[in-house]
Image (cartoon, rainbow, N blue to C red):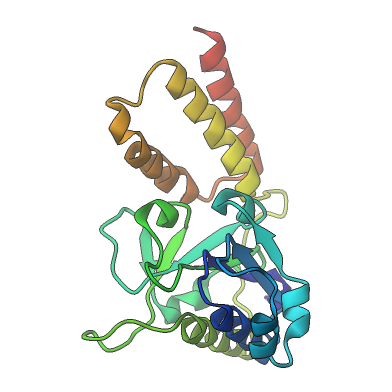
Length: 237
């Protein structure tokens, strides 16, 4: 289990202070990777650097993307944080369940914006949702507080033990980029046969498709086979 495989992803963060505090929390527990998607403030700025205190290096080496898909292209397992239970066919885990996650893979913890959190559409990109136990009558946590709780818990897991996962060395899990490419091929074919009807239901149907494919632990070979199947179906028309 390596800390280098863990990324903390802030989706549309709104406050400079929170971005800086998140960078500080990441460095507090010796993690290194901060990813931002469409931050509202100019990034980086003086306020972000000031609130990061001694974690300016985390800010400077962070990566910024304009879409969620691009940010997740090199992430194998996405764990979305949410203050509320989602009525979706997706695995919901708690902090203790993190001990079972294969951290030999690239794992990304996805955090929503301070005002609205993560939408169901954004959740559909995740393999799991994680809820931090808190007062049931007051579940709202500051963005940096949520991140530091998870970072501390992860650090304690890494320090205590590594969880062995027995799997053939010849089997390589598909990357998010490979899954996205396969899914795009599937969606293009479905668009050509006007599958998404009525049109207003298309976003929800796409969300459900992502839920199906992203929660499956497909190998790169299985992903290539499915891509070939979708490509062949397109040629038959």
